[in-house]
Image (cartoon, rainbow, N blue to C red):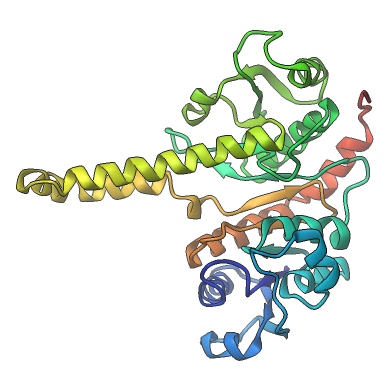
Length: 332
């Protein structure tokens, strides 16, 4: 399998990207990676070039660039060339930890959409208390949505959860302000009605407070609410660990307790560590495109690579395409 990776995207590029690529090719048989970026910065970090190629470019899309304009004007940027490797058939999937909006634009303009999918969705897997995790989509690719878009998200999320996460008959919930039927605004009410007839295991409305309890394997919403939910979860988890650390270091007695609980606390942190869950898939594109977390370390890059591999191995894109072709969506 061949993957293209934007070596210059993310807070710790290219060092952590290269480390992740090296670790992945040593673990995964038959994996070939093309790193796209500044060869002068990448080569010194490559301790072994087996199954790793470099496409040299010095152009980079930064976090400050306007996404659509940057993709159109910076045609030799590492992120754009990474997507082009997929478009031209030289790679089966691509990964970037760079500008999310730019990767979304490159996915649309370069890789292209699956026929029948109106809008791709950005879809991370988030942790739950039982360690199983759940898929949340959309978390920001589209701040507005129509009911049929949420149905498409639900179908794509269900297919991914079943084929990549190996969840048999994954449950799908609609994020709402209450669990009762008929709750919510016009969008959620119409989406609820359509989801009841979709080829998924729809369990109805779910509330944000129950997400980390594993209320559903897949939770769908429009990008505005999804992004708010995602940032709230990330921020709360970070704040809790800070409070816990400060409390544990506040006195000699609590420091002794912290030492005794050290391994248990590491296990707790591992359950809530984004790096163990890979990246956020851009579902609905003509090939797997993975958005790794901007602060990804090498472990997170390896997880994102494994995620892309699972999507390719299980032919997720074509399964989504076939399923969508057999469906009829109500249009507003």
